[in-house]
Length: 415
Image (cartoon, rainbow, N blue to C red; front, side, top):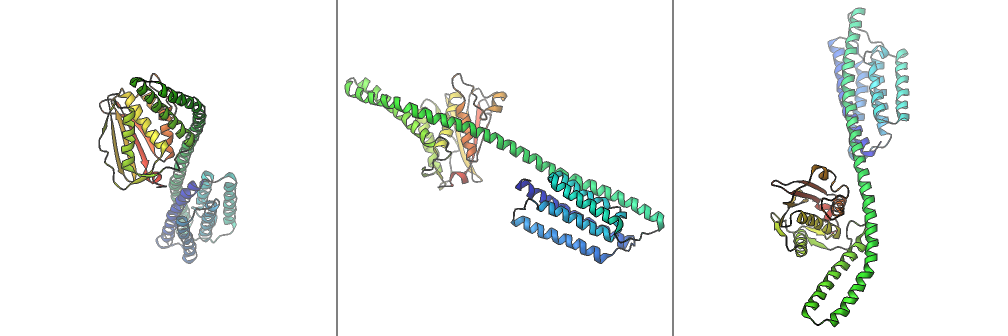
């Protein structure tokens, strides 16, 4: 079993043992004092006390240590042997509660491996077989007829108890298994996304290397042209081209330095509010025609994070997408709650269709006439690698709201 599942299942088993100990105690007291049966209270009490002590030690160990792979089977064997001891002192195989031995076997078949289940089955069969020949007879009350009626009543009570306990435990085990399957599905999806991101990062690094040479050639030619042109207008155009080439080379340097990496290890620690202000200011320079409305962007002072180039690019992608959908105006809001940064980017565009929203961010897809949908796909990957989440939802009045949740513990891990 998986370590987390083992801990959860063992916790359920210990809770189940608490109920069975209480039920065994109540049954013994009723038989001894209400039905006036000759129950060996000292012997039975010693067995129940032993089970209670085992449960207390197991609870204490569970809180301090991770249970071993065979510990669950050992506890089931202890339950089988404990119940066998109780049955030995209370009539053996003639006890109507003897079929409670099947409870541990049912749990084993649900949780344990086939080999471990067969071990439990062999021990259970051996115990039941032994109880048929070796046991202390328990005198009944009211003669043979009364004894038979009591036996039938005991079987009825045993059936109800077994049904309730099996339903409780097996339902809990089934829920644990379903949660584990969902976790595995999410892990497979993350692995597939990581594989795609790695392929894209490799392609990006290769493209950056290939583009470096022509950009360098263009920079040299522009430097020569700058010395030759005389017109102020031409000189201004050359400066603009040089600035644009510089931006391209800086972007390629960033790609080459951080392709395949989540965090920029050489990044510096900055205040969170300053980081957000710089991000918005730099983006506004790139998109001066878009009105950027920053409401509720007051962040607590003193919070510092590690400047992450991939995160900066991911958040810039969200701003670009919003501006493409709503060229006139977009809105940004930021807040910190429960040690989590919440950033929302809202646009007033046409919104997303349910079909597109279902796969957006999980696979490259775009609603634009030009584009390949990689921006949001990469943004989703970066945010999830940092332990965060990105959700897209319709905006009241039209448009889309992108909501980013980022745990600050991950962002300031190296600050």
